[in-house]
Image (cartoon, rainbow, N blue to C red; front, side, top):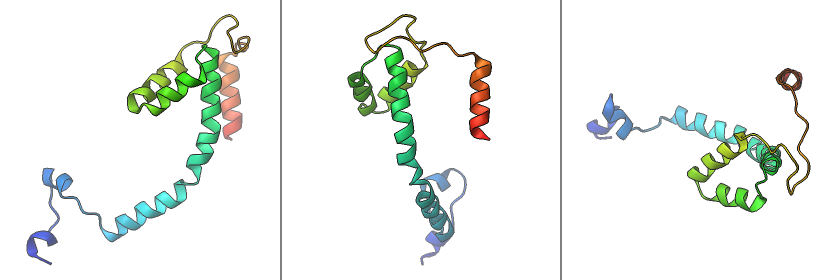
Length: 114
């Protein structure tokens, strides 16, 4: 190997000329293999929950699909929509869900986690 390639650059140049070692490559591959099965499971759980939440504010599935497929700006818009308060009255998707206190939500989350 030429001498200029055997030294690992430092500082600002390290970012531009970064080369992963064998151990780093193995660790990245292992992480990918271990985490990959969780991605479909998260999608199966999160997509219906997000759609129900969007229905609470009167947004249709078409808008959700359009925003989800439009890239990072659409994802941020979806995140913003999900955080909006729900409709106080009935909308085309049905009556509003009953209000739940923060204490009840916290107890539900903590009991589900452990």
